[in-house]
Image (cartoon, rainbow, N blue to C red):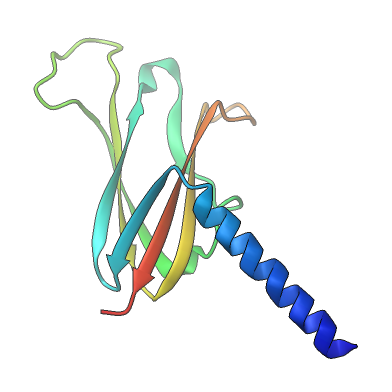
Length: 125
């Protein structure tokens, strides 16, 4: 009986991990130690900004996320209220798959209006 339960739990976990990887908006395939950038359009003049949703993310200890902040678009005119990009660097620390969920919301509101999920598939070098 216990062996069946362990087998069932293992299958459920594998299906959940696979479903999270398939649902991603973006996939980064990295070697351990390698990093890549994620850029998302943002307009802070509206009060909205991107943030990592640690509760919705999966296996975050496998990656290091560095917030590079907001910047105007390269070559764009400097217009008040114009959107730009928010950048993060994501570095693979260990082999495995992690999902990082970014949410676009106003800090004083509970609900977000958009999300962006990044699957990070890290392999040993």
